[in-house]
Amino acid sequence: LKAGVMEDRVHTRTYSGTPQGGIVSPILANIYLHELDMFMAERIAAFERGKVRATNPEYGRLAGRIQKQRKRVTMLRAKDNVDEVKVAASLAKIQTLLPQKRSIPSRDAMDPGYRRLRYCRYADDFMIGVIGSKEDARSVFAEVRAFLTEALALTVSEEKSGIRKASDGAAFLGYEVRTYTTRQRVVRSRQGSVSFLRRPPSEVMQLHVPWEKVHAFASAKGYGDLSVLKPRHRSLLLSCSDVEIVLAYNAELRGFANYYALAKDVSFKLNRLEFLQRWSLFKTLASKHKTNVRAVVARMRTGQEFTIGYDVDGQPRSVKVWKLAHLKRDPATSSRIDIQPWTQVFTHSRTDWVDRQNAKQCEACGRSDVPCQVHHIRGMADVSHRGFVVRMKVARARRTVVLCEQCHWDTHRGRLPDLRQSDGSSQWRAACGESCTCGSAGGSGLTP
Image (cartoon, rainbow, N blue to C red; front, side):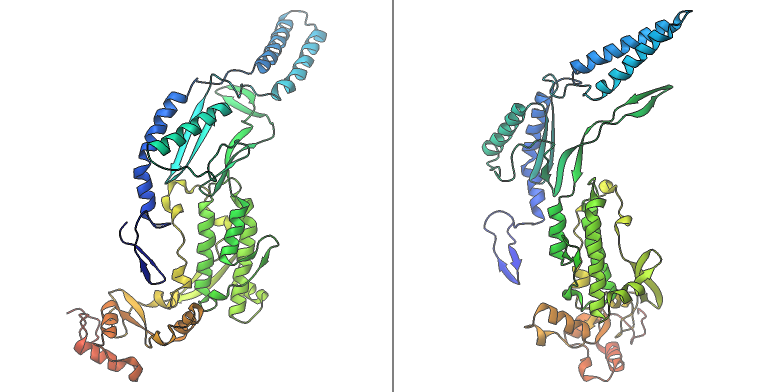
């Protein structure tokens, strides 16, 4: 809380509160709003009433008439001389009453003797669900607002708070939460040896992906215009390698899809986004290689997939273009859905991702049993005043060498010769054997 904020290399002190989006905010919210959790637990226990909803009187009346006709059919068929005319008349009445019974709810949705209260909180956002009258909802809303104001000295946002009808939906954690009315249908079920017809619930609470979130994501990433499905290339990625471009696109769409994987309509809503994202990828690669999109698609197509190849230690590898078919629809068992994809490791790095994967042996001391890094032989100070895109392009174009961590430190401290003045790595390797503190024996790669 006292560390302050670093923005554009300028440190700003924090006088009160936490920075917007700071990692400590959810922890503090859980600590401070624990009192609200306890208050809601007590309120739920006092609010709830009844075990089941009362039967709809009209539904019960029709069910009784149907049962009466069925008993009559059973009695008529039990006689020696079955009156088929009366049996047919009773069966006709049953067939007339059944559609009427199936068209109305079996329970009283507004039964005053049945009430339920549900509460869900994530950090400082929470949603309360009420099964009851609108007056019950108003009462709960007023009590919660009064508790937050008086007990916790918090102010409820008027813009984000209010009472919503379940069928109209409400926004919560980026989702749209609302009930969905399905068409009336009858399915056959079995309980033990008894088979019967039943109606599934017609009012189902579901999570949906808001269209505005999809449009905002496509716009923020620079995929193009989602409303007319017009993709465009991303000039910021042109200095990256093909593999890094594919990895960046994969991480972005996969992260967005994983977050909304709980939504009922995630495949439908993200289908257009996937199309726009994929063709934006193709156009970016085509712009990078000064070719057309058709050539890029033909080069990347591998059966039903699109892949890009690269080599690590002389072994061929490939990266698939991620698609919605790879989405796992049950991510609730993992907390990793909250992790934002860190695409900067591909798009904002001064070195190539493939080069970093191949950085296994130090070119100064020869060691391969320690972590290695990619070092620019010529520094970047001469272009520090240029724009970000220019700095990235220059960094990618300049000559690099692979160094272990210790040799990298020694190079920056001036303990090893400047490669800009040498004719190769032989002088550097010899100097490393004399002055380097990495623990190598004359560049042999052996630990003494």
